[in-house]
Image 1 (tube, helix red, strand yellow):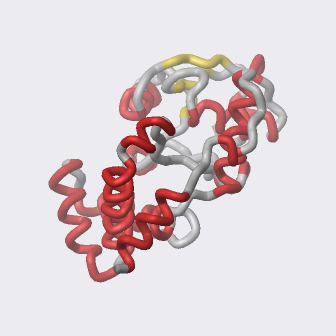
Image 2 (cartoon, one colour):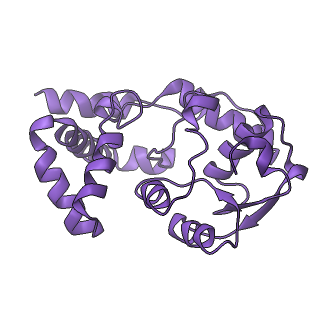
Length: 208
């Protein structure tokens, strides 16, 4: 497999057919001339299972995140393209809460977000790289070389952790647009789901 056209008729391994990575890939493939009927979608499960299925030849291609994309590359598998180069901004990770719960637990939520932002600030500080690497190696059982490659990607100013864990509004809009396009859910503006008042209070708490 050396191009998108080589994926025609091949099997695409997914976590589930309507989850984030699958929807991103559908969009990438469609932009490159491949519709859903041009390849087979096979639910496999979590990323580590998809990598295992790739290595065993049970599927032909999949979307993988860190550190599994590095494991795949080390195993000689080809990374066809970075999704960000195709679909642009995308909000890959985020925290969500029911509005009624958030209202009833506002102080706890503010403290949680503040702690999360503080953690991101710590991780992005170059002075903490060695300590972060040691934590990753211990908690994720990674080799030193793989850990450093992960950190290079996670700390990249353009594609890594967002400063202060700030929501990417363009990325959120893309996420919702993909869900509307490929799952049939109604198209909704990001403003329907986003309320950053508590986030702003968390930043104020950290500034004290």
